[in-house]
Image 1 (cartoon, rainbow, N blue to C red):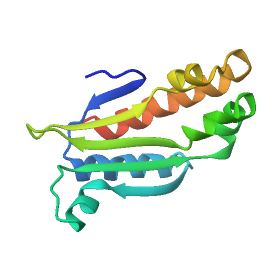
Image 2 (image 1 turned 60 degrees about the vertical axis):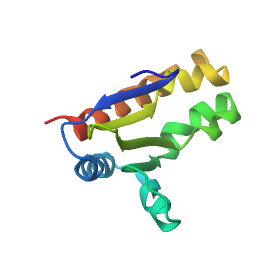
Image 3 (image 1 turned 180 degrees about the horizontal axis):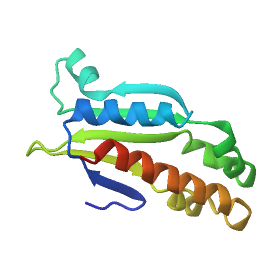
Length: 133
């Protein structure tokens, strides 16, 4: 599955376990969890059905600020987000925005390359921790 700028990994775990593993990994890296949005619970609250669709918003100022210093509009895409969701066949997925895509979207180049690289590596590691057996 590919959408422009979106990285999606299949999880070896169900939605709840994948999210729990992601939250644990985020916390272990010393990042702040700003919000946890359970879209399925929101849908249920208004009488609608939605397969598990759970968003985690997290990050830290040290990692994101260099990108916003280069171009403040990056702030619309930060803090980082990861979506854990279940498809119609019951498979669980984890999706997040590629930091290189975010940088390109906002015209951020060389001056923030170290921050972009660090963010890319961090998200890759978090996603693998959350989805791997």
